[in-house]
Image 1 (tube, helix red, strand yellow):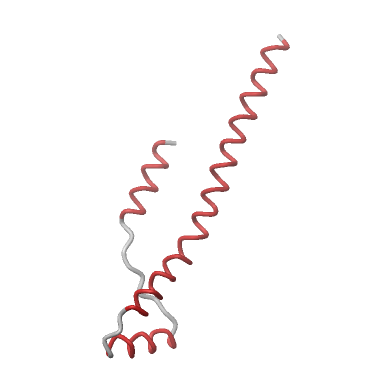
Image 2 (spheres, rainbow, N blue to C red):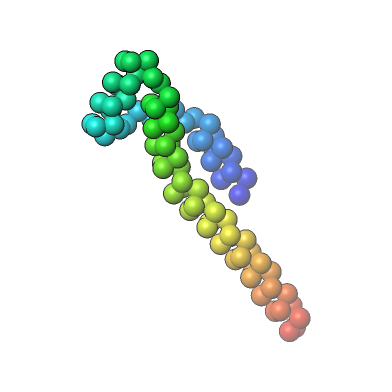
Length: 85
């Protein structure tokens, strides 16, 4: 488990900025940046990163609770078996 957490932390620390946008978004952002308005570009880039990260976060939360539930079920099963002996 420690190896998995270490791997996730290392991978998240190596994230670089995402510059992928649709053609219309790119044209709008280039127009705004050329006019000196960088706030919209930063907002759209943050939104892209949010949409990219949200599914991984959801899967991680589900996996965490699944792991905890399976561990507690295994402990209960082990204690029930030891009581029957």
